Image 1 (cartoon, rainbow, N blue to C red):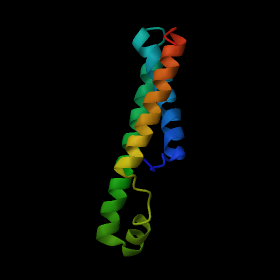
Image 2 (cartoon, one colour; image 1 turned 135 degrees about the vertical axis):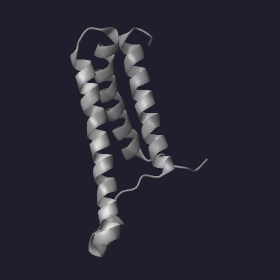
Image 3 (cartoon, rainbow, N blue to C red; image 1 turned 45 degrees about the horizontal axis):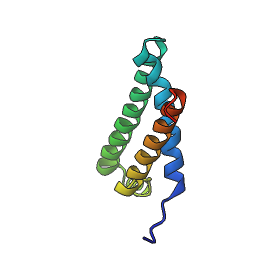
Length: 104
């Protein structure tokens, strides 16, 4: 027992889950073409950030030791942090989906 669930990743995960549901639902139900574009923009933005950080890491390790020290302080989520965010996303989207479609 005794383990506390951190609220910040839970709340951020819930917000991200609801945002993803809002983008994917119209696309899946065929009520809007904007869902696909929003989903594509969401995925592209995340890929861009990951590639930019990877490129910055390569640059730092090769050419800029000062930048390497700054990169060492960047937020690196743990497995527990990611699991908490995914739990928040799953709970929020599940409750919202069931509420909207009459399941609760």
